[in-house]
Image 1 (cartoon, one colour):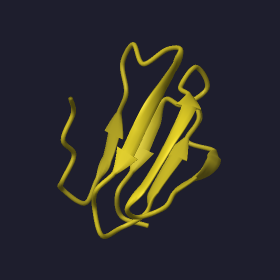
Image 2 (cartoon, rainbow, N blue to C red):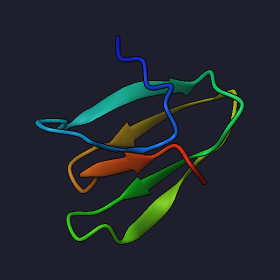
Image 3 (cartoon, one colour):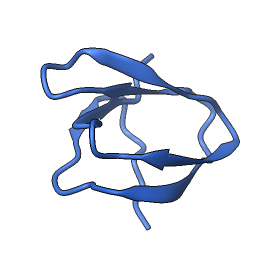
Image 4 (tube, helix red, strand yellow):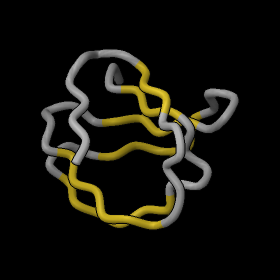
Length: 62
């Protein structure tokens, strides 16, 4: 289990493969690639399955 709470961009080292994810926060999370390019958003209070192979960073300040 991981908990991210501070408004910042986090580096995701070694996050590979497909897994469940639940965003319990009241902010959406932006997923970013290796060059900080936008991939998508994770909505608030949203549960989903995703492949993390292309996600290098997440931004909690969107």
